[in-house]
View (cartoon, rainbow, N blue to C red):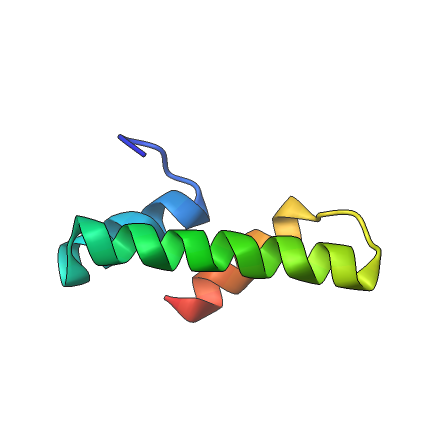
Length: 59
């Protein structure tokens, strides 16, 4: 995470500040699994740009 400036890193840093590392780790795992499920369920390729715009809306 460090000093990355992509949407997911910014989201995760803000989440850690709000809820702490343990809850943020669970939230990140949940987000990752939901993304993987959606990709597999729809049979489409993962689109990074779509995921980044979703992260911006969720923050």
